[in-house]
Length: 136
Image (cartoon, rainbow, N blue to C red):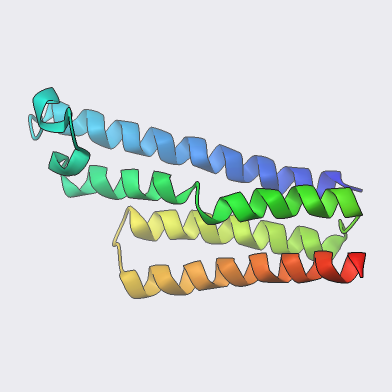
């Protein structure tokens, strides 16, 4: 059933909205604490304090490899590659995006982020491989 893949896709979209809220709250806090003024960020957001910049960078990340994720979900649904392995890979990918956000907007340890990112990319690769196997 293709609905197995709809749920992780919806979860990833929800996560993007959550990251957007985190970014908004951190930017709002920067204004409230007078760490930044409108004139400071009218041309570039570089003047925001680091927590707000990290949240913004992570929000941008939600439109990078997730683009591949959504394409793979649609293709998998189209060709009928919607089994439990594909669903597990999709959920694992979403989990890596959540953990990546928590690291990125928290400790921001690059080595941990890189490992989680690599696991997420591996999930995408195996989703792609599953689709290739289904159509060959």
